[in-house]
Length: 288
Image (tube, rainbow, N blue to C red; front, side):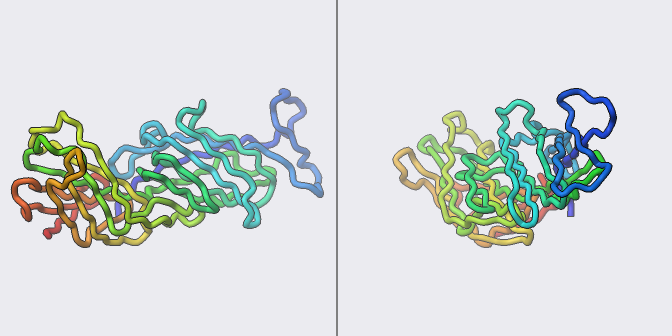
C-alpha cells in the first residue's frame, strides 16, 4: 500500500568529552560509572513533511502542520512533554534534555483546531491532517549522533463534490458521519473520541450559480484497519431549512486515502455517483 511519510531526522548533541569546550556546550564525564544518570541534549530537526503525493517529503510548513508534540517516556512514566505551534520560532526543531537510559518517544504533527490533551489522548474540536510515529531510543555515552523516525499519516479525508448548479439560497452544508474520530491516543496511534457531530461548512457567495466547482472536505482520525460509516449530508438555507438531503451508506474509509463522492444533488436526486479519489492511495468506485 502506498504511504505518505513525514521523514524525521533526529540529530543529537552528545556530552562533550574533549579537553576544551565553550560555555554553552553540554559536558559529562564518561570515563567511569556514576550512581546517578547523566544529562544530555538531544536536538530534533525535521527536514520532512509532504505533499499529497505518495512517498514524498518536505517540511512541516510544506505539510501545513500547525502543532507538533513530543512525549518522552522512561520506565512507562511520562518524563517530559514538548509542544510547538507554527507561530513558535524554530518550529520543527526540538531540544530535549534526556537522562541516560531507555526512552520511548512519541511524535504527533497535526493541523487540527483547538487541541486538548487528556491522559494519552489528543482531541481536536475540528480534526485535520495528522501524522504520528514512535521512536525507541537508548540514550547512552557514545551513542550515534543521528537517529531517525518516520511519521505516518493517521488521518482520512472525506470529499463531497456537487456537480450541478449551486442555487442562490444555499448557505451551508452539514455533514454528519455516524462514526467519526476526533482524537488520537499518542501511545498507540489509534483513534479515540468517536462522535456523531454535524460538521458545518459555510458556502461562499462566489459559488452561487456555479456548476461543478463546489466541494467540501472533512478530516478525521482513522484506525489502522479500514472501517465504514453512514454519512448524512444536508444542504441548508441561511435560516437552516434544508434544500436537499442525502444519506451515504457504508462509506469506506482508510488512513492516507481520500474518499471522494460527487454528483448532482439539487436537481436530480438519486443521480449521485461515488468514487474514491487517488489523491493519497489507490482508487475505488462505488455506486449507491
